[in-house]
Length: 93
Image (cartoon, rainbow, N blue to C red; front, side, top):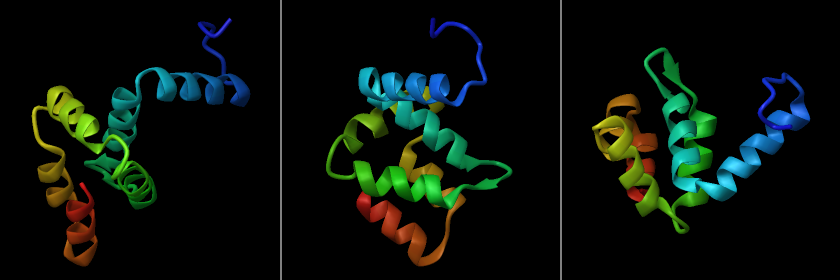
């Protein structure tokens, strides 16, 4: 029963895998929202999503990000990062 609010690592991983497979745009927007946080950037998560999804479904992710957040992913990344790192991410998206 996956509806049970469990702290079990297996159940959490299984829920994430199902969400990623069923709704990849929404899943990666959730990951990006957690990575681009007002309390600081999770550069590992941000880099992982942008690099691994750049040639796969970045267009869908950018559209979903705009729909959910009301701001473009490029603007969010540009506001939250700087320098060569920012330029790399913006180039990839």
